[in-house]
Length: 184
Image (cartoon, rainbow, N blue to C red; front, side):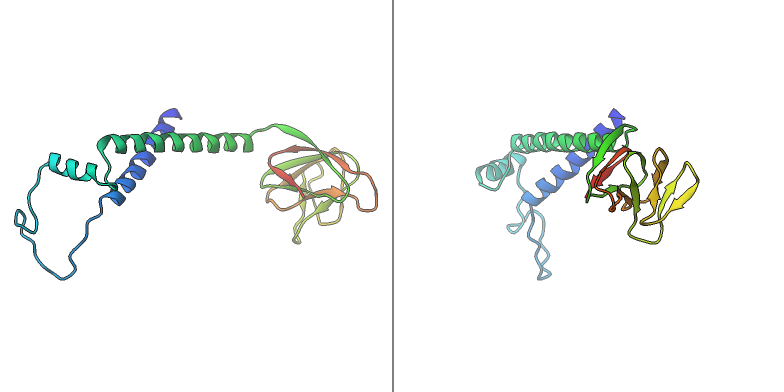
């Protein structure tokens, strides 16, 4: 896993560095069809030290040290971003069960693949379309507005559906949640 991540980071750094270097050293093409002979007055042969001297003295030119520093900085930033994304993915895919209190007037909306168990209160299903939520305990589909039984495992194969407290009551819900969700 570490080798794959380091290869990915190295590839991103090289591509990003190449793009940055390429942006610094653009060449103006002649659009009138002139053919330039290499080594002529229009296209002189120069040495590397001459080019380094000319580019290093300009405000837009970059020395080799500056390019290396830019590459190192880009590598550090990409590593930090990649580490953060990996941490987010690990937390999103964890099997951790979270206890969520849903107050009256709020809806607990599931993301793809989330599982709920209503532990306390009276819940009703919420769905924005004709399909409902899957009650795995009874093997039934619970459609929008129907009662969700307590202590039943409810699966949300697609996000955007959820549970909410029964509007006729004034109490909220306590729900065990595995997977991603949001409270709206």
